Amino acid sequence: MQTHIQARMKNPAYVLPDGLKGIGSVFKAVAGGGLEPALQEIVALRASQINGCSACVHAHHANLVKAGESSERIASVAAWREAPFYDAAERAALALTEAVTRLADRSGEAVDDALWDEVTRHFDERQTSALLLLIGVTNMFNRLNAAIREPAGTTWG
Image (cartoon, rainbow, N blue to C red):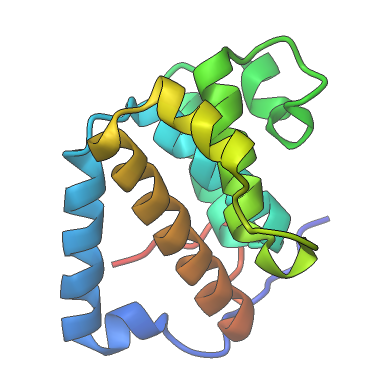
């Protein structure tokens, strides 16, 4: 059964064109940061799962399917620690995603030295910068969408 859910308002990024322009610049920077597109989608999917953003979970899932990712990898992003489908670099990126997304859930540092060392073992400074910007902008969109109740399957633009 499909229930029609409607957003409370148009996404603020589209209401304020300068905001969208700025966000577009962040996405352009991320795209030029040297991260594989599939990794970008996996990271964004994981942050969106944590934040319960149905619109973003749906969009990142669809992007991964379109890119030819396996159903095993897509379906097990939420349980990546126990799944054998991710390499060491992807695991480091997912751990960083969880740490940065769950800031309030940490008793110590948001990103401890061990995690930072693992991330920077796999990613250079440009890639790490892209990863952090991606996690940040994904969390921003998750929060905007949660506030306005953006439904899954939304086409933006």
